[in-house]
Length: 189
Image (cartoon, rainbow, N blue to C red; front, side, top):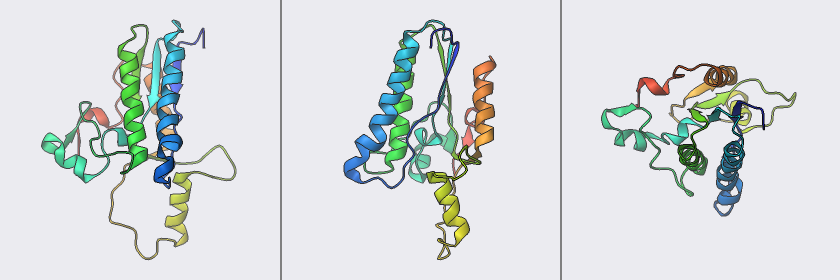
């Protein structure tokens, strides 16, 4: 890492069907320990001036219950997910804990700036010829008729993977605040 000025931390397990007994080892440990590992290396590398962490909107809120607790329903940087847990949306919980750990570790350091991007559900083309991901599986269910009995009336934040990549590069190379929606105080509905 020595000689690098920018570090991108983008990896975290995204698995929706996890047995309750496996949540810690499948989601929480990899998300938290992965973040700690990256930032411990950054802490020892003074050439690094900026870390771009791709978190998730799930670190901010899980569902309408979180929205009801937000004063005026406006989401900004002070809002953290309050409903996710090991037993309720453990993926969201993993993103919350990993991002909080990143801020805690970054606050203890002065040689780099932490920038966090909180995209919604990331969809788009992948690197492999045979797509294998939770996002792909969901899209396949929507298109194959697997949900022909009806899809729940839910709203999700969706973003194209290419837009996330642009936001990551922008966050890495521009000084001004990078806003892909979060900083404007989005209305929670």
